[in-house]
Image (cartoon, rainbow, N blue to C red; front, side):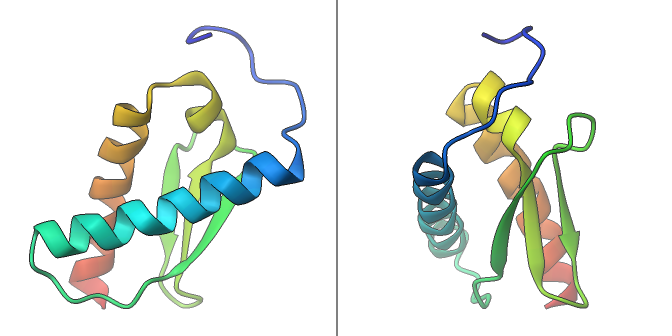
Length: 91
């Protein structure tokens, strides 16, 4: 599935599970690195080029549905950790 073009819609129930897991992962990463950050609002984007981003004004952390659907969870966590670093510098 890694190189397939992402074109199908993801059911809402699956998106909700992904969001809940991303929040748990964010909290676990903060605990592991001993940083105290407020949990941001998580959103899933339909972007295929931008894997994730941090919108500091709204405290929104966006992760690409394409990334989650086409990559291993380890890759998703690497992107989340990278964005978490941006959050920590602005929080």
